[in-house]
Image (cartoon, rainbow, N blue to C red; front, side, top):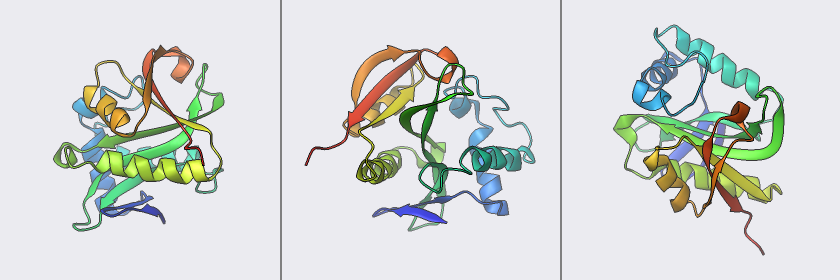
Length: 183
């Protein structure tokens, strides 16, 4: 299912199609990507068969969200290549099993798709949609040292509000926030 389209991207559900599963594995088996994802269980992936498990985790996480929140594939319209993942979801608190009312956007790009502005374009579109739904502010939380992701946050017009620990089980994360545009 397509969630949002932009000038260059289709943001859509990840599927169990072999090409999607291969791309999930290719992205989430890379230590240079998963090292920024904190203590995410099961990462990095170590066998291609684990891609279906990752997909099922995302599907279960968002099953009750009615399409408002999700972990979606970022497909380049011109080529059909999935550049990576973009997400919009309620932030897990401390403990992580308790969701907060705070909304997070995030992205994970394959190395072959970095430097094209895809993360900024995808997150901007999802943020606009979420602000239109009435959300007053959206966060991005970034592992300290992940300068490329912090640069995306700044390009999105997000303000850095320091390191905070109230989400993801108390992990210390660089926190960025953007308030909804005023009319």
